[in-house]
Image 1 (cartoon, one colour):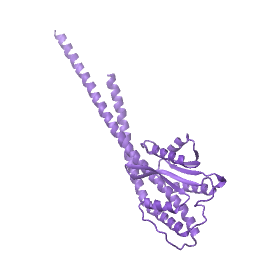
Image 2 (cartoon, one colour):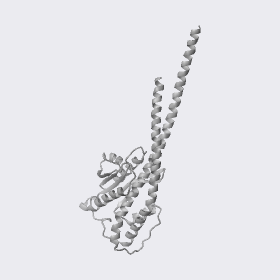
Image 3 (cartoon, one colour):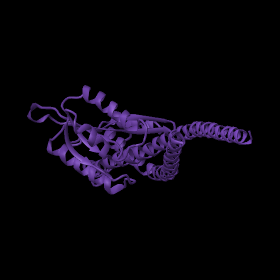
Image 4 (cartoon, one colour):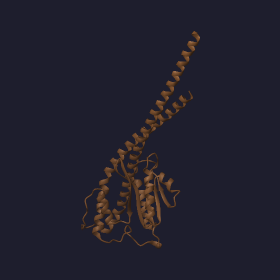
Length: 295
């Protein structure tokens, strides 16, 4: 009876876990669909800004702007790395892959400084040797434009002030629901070549160098579009990372549900065997007792 009781408690715990994993799977599926829809709706706007930025940089020549490469202050070069992780776990290897990518990137950079997005990343890098400048958290909700604006304003202000000389962002790019890969993208300083590569990477046509007339001036148009461009890249990375997180969690919960069902089936089989053995033993005892009384 003790074994039966133990098996009953274990099966009850697994059934409760199975309910949680299936519920989280459904929630992640709904969030994944919503995130992909938002990403598809906003992508054309920021793609247009990206193309305009390339046209201005390639056609205007050298402009005096803080968004281009500038002299290193105090003869010390620093690189900021924006790391986008999740605020919750239970997403398989989603965060571990980001940590591996960041560690590899920081090993190649000069004086890396971290700007963290997500509480999981902060818990991990709080014990690392790299200096953490700032930490942002969205409490597991869909990031919006205000969140991207806050991060972009902080990065641009610190870059212009001279806190760092180069900015990278590391996030998870979702090629498909089963192919999620960490991606490193350089935000600052701006480069026409790298913008061209980004346009081609997202399926856009190759841009040719064209001459345009800018009103009131090339400098004014560029200084207006550059912060929007940075904000657009950050927002796109945040939403894509959020969608990738939901896809990873959906896959992890699906696999956990399958494992729970297999464990439950195995325990149910053991429970039936032990119960059948107990019933057979009780029947044998009753028959033996009845025979003894009849004699």
